[in-house]
Image (spheres, rainbow, N blue to C red):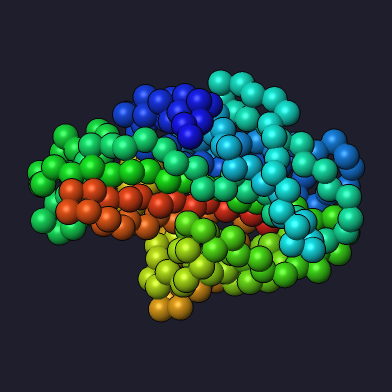
Length: 267
């Protein structure tokens, strides 16, 4: 059945991405929950973590420390962002997720080298006309008290899953993660790494989504889909993965996943 709200959101996404490729994110007011005044912002952006337009989803969900999954409903909506207020009661680690969100079908160009371009990028390349269905998801982990973290993959779509607690990340200390697609390792996946407000420190040309993105901070997962990141500064980090899959001779799927982390200063 067609979801009216999801359909309207998809139209908004199409209008916005016609100029630039936006990426999804979730940003909580607290990563380590110390009081009940908690909210999580859901939006699309070009510059993490500045909300550009709202990312609504029919699949918002909260995974509790015991693995129980509860649907979440937005407590507020604006043009720029959607806000969630998950209930965090027992101690442990909680995963807040948008779930896999289906976007619009785009016209695209496939070059001789097998790269896909859409939106404004189509104007600067030549290749075979094709189409691309866009899927996106975003996750963030919250902890109350001792994290006692256990990885709990969704096993649907693309996801970036921490292998150790994502709520005890600090500058200079590595965190091990894995990239999965439908529960299976995604070997050699490219992981985009961005820091909050980094565009005020260094000008960049490429979109975070751009297939030509060769940022020095990018990380390549190994043959088992695993990688490590060692934060170089405190604050918020943004991890983003795009995987393309041909499903028909003239149809591709673009699967995109984001994870927000907080890196604390060393004591």
